[in-house]
Length: 96
Image (cartoon, rainbow, N blue to C red):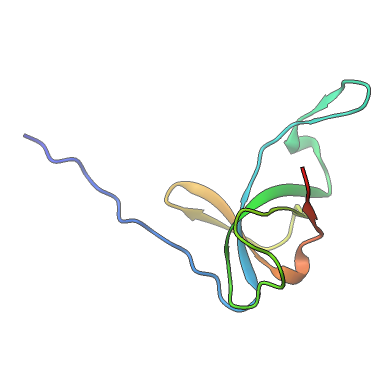
């Protein structure tokens, strides 16, 4: 019997004022019904905060945030693409 290969569980604990965000690939719809894919948005993206450092400045895991497309560092975490961004680079918390 072959044993399943197991990948170690990897966690990423940000330091200081860094946050870890899972970018969303949502589509946006204009008032006139035009659907704009997330890849077409030039300046910013949204994502869900999955971890915060010791100085998060009011940001908590689970918050939806807006951030510049080119902000932070791209990291692959257990096969999932995440961003590690300084708290000061976040633009806003999104209230749905």
